[in-house]
Image (cartoon, rainbow, N blue to C red; front, side, top):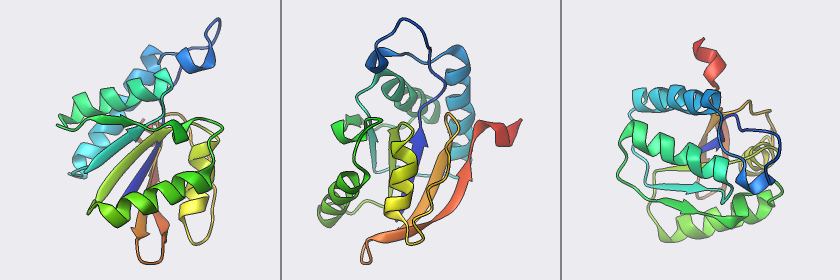
Length: 158
């Protein structure tokens, strides 16, 4: 099965509470570029989870719209910037014991996306995630570990 971990697109800075920072125009464009990459992979998502923060919710919604996915985006409070990667890993393993998912997408923030990549992989590599970048993890449910097979960001296509 594959787990796709995505950092939200570029977000506004300034007089915003962190939870309410919206995507910039650049951030929305970054997400659209990554949506085209995912569409080219013909990936059929079984579930999509996003942080409750506005920029992650907007990122997930732009992806769903661009790829024309007929799935709800599930808000997962564990996916905040200061979330615990081990708790997310445990949650995913619990859900995977129940559901027969083959492809899931998680939309979150730095540093969690980096820590989560390490938590889910055997080599525990914690890559940096530019905005809107995606890491694809080939995940072995039996071993409860995987490996990063690809990592792409919008700058790969410029």
